[in-house]
Image (cartoon, rainbow, N blue to C red; front, side):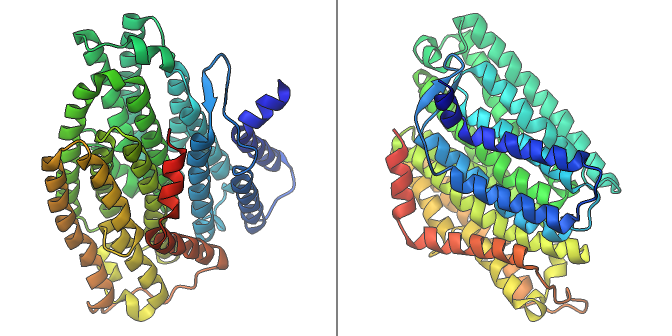
Length: 468
């Protein structure tokens, strides 16, 4: 029994062990150099990532409230990989920070909550895990303690999160009142499309919508992204959103499958609004973090198209796209993080003439933007192709046509930044920035991921083989 517990909860236990190690480091009277601590944590993260691919077993714990299998372990490994990349990218920012142990403790705490959320097999456990993954994020958003807008970002995030959690908890209480159970397996057979259940489901969708920044629940996103440190913004944009999307697909496909007609119509409307509004607001942005905030909102609209397919292909396409999104978005945020930490400049106009002073970083950012825009042969093209293909499987060609038009619009604002970097002149360009070997390694991983997953079909085939 103990061996089964250790194997099934291996990934969660490793994260918990790392948190305790960092607590002991913090409580130690001896001062530890930031560079030493960052390198030590990165080694632990790398070992955690490697361990996630071994001794994978399907099973349940805690009275079927916790479930894991090979697919869920792979999703957790994607989040582990993204967290490692963010940690590598954060070196220039963290090396001079006063609270490095606290940063990692909060980040690993929210990651632990995401792991429990992905493996939750009960609505109550899902809610508790969601809170564990959300509350430390508000503290991380306020991690630039000397900056007022960082405190403002944390305040807006905690208020919006509290509101969305309230909606979610109200929906869960109605589900329990109507069915008498919170277990996913039992709900899938007892949940029917009566008015009370539909209202409860709308509340659940609203709660999920806040977490993934889907329109009309997106209003907090840009302000929080802009006010937070770049490392926290990239974590919010990729890791937090990816975990919620994994759970959303699982819940819709396995728990609320009998209500497919109802939630298909909801996702249809939300997807269209999210793509259009995300793109229109992205066109107007001047701050790079706000720009990527609205870009990420538009990307969620494309992901929802894949979810509407309600098929193995839909599930696989969402996971595949999240993997590509990790590489693409973190490549872009890696450059922005380095420039922000070194020069403090974050506006799009600051990147005019960027290629003349930083050609290597310019190409990393350009490849990331090409992938986010869905330009072949980058991985982003194939990610969006599989999402649209999954959505087209149900014959929703109107939705596919709207998505295609929005892809054309998105090309404009991605290419606008590339034009600024390579073609526009700047009297005060960003000076040449020397990246340390850790941020450089993170960028190499991201660019390699964008190119390899775009040219090799094995990644999608592997994910599809895991989907049951």
